[in-house]
Amino acid sequence: MKEHIVRGFRFETYKAPELSVFDRLLEIFTDLLTHTSGDFDEAIDWLRMLDEEYQLTTPEYTIDDFIEDLKKKGYIREEVDPNGGNGIRLSAKMEQNIRKQALNQIFGNLGKSGNGNHKTNKSGTGEDTTGEFRNYNFGDPVEKISITESLKNAQINNGIGDFHLTEDDLIVEDSIHQSQMSTVLMIDISHSMILYGEDRITPAKKVAMALAELITTRYPKDTLDIIVFGDDAWPVKIQELPYLQVGPYHTNTVAGLQLAMDILRRKRNTNKQIFMITDGKPSCVRQPDGTYYMNSYGLDEYVVQKCYNMASQARRLHIPITTFMIAQDPYLQQFVSEFTEANQGKAFYTGLNGLGHMIFEDYETNRKKRIR
View: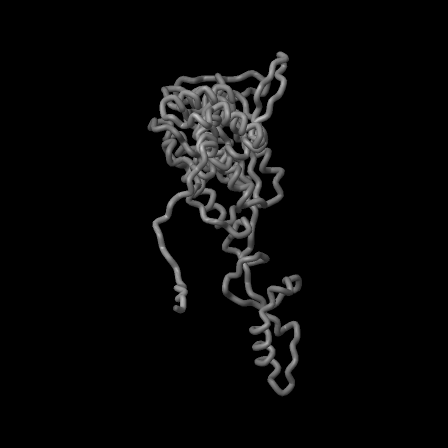
């Protein structure tokens, strides 16, 4: 009997791949490291507590087995601490894993991108075509020449009987100019970021790590600098983000803006922007003699005016500031509104849950236009 072969497709309900015990623990442990500012021992203690409550492990695979696998797979390494004892430090692989997980949690609905450049509404040299044609200009890449359109043009200009192709006949496919974006992300690490029973620094760190991973992988031609501000402001490296902690600081917004603008002045591309995540009012400025003027009660007119001056200065440098205000106080929102008006930038009054999506959407919006 002749065997019949059935060809075609079979559709079944999607089943997510089964994660191993190690992978499940790694996902939870990575999140705990963000909450504990990279403290391995504290994160493991939390993991053991969760294991007791939710039975995350099995008799065949324990938390101790998980720690050994972390070492074998290069996520952690043992080092001698200054006191002569052995300590555990996170490896670069684990730090990147923390950033990747933050990206997946916050921007998990992103699709794949092509080359990661910023498209504008200006035509020019780029890889994406507009669907339109134009005359050839000196310096246009040869591969952009449309053979069909150029031959048609030559036929129209010169006729079939004496057919020849000249430079004036050449037609190229127009493309979208691809620009670069330089972004400075400012994170408030003043004491109020952990006050009132709400952890605000952890979501801010996650957003910073997700944005850093997004830009370095999807838009490698862009630049991202991250600074933190309390009594003063200073830059932090991407690798330092998991370890950020809130200090006993006031909020020196002026110092943060000064540093952000100094960084952006050194960037050669024209598209520049500042993202500022803050939850409190400006309460501190540094005086020319090095002393600090501080006032935590209400909005101090002297401090506020310094902030407005910085906003105006950034506007003159064509640097828009987008403020993500994690506070609901009407008088603080009024300050942000006037600050935004002085800069001609944007402001979002947001809770912690929607922070990541809002920053991504604003970043994507700014990608599509040239900031001048």
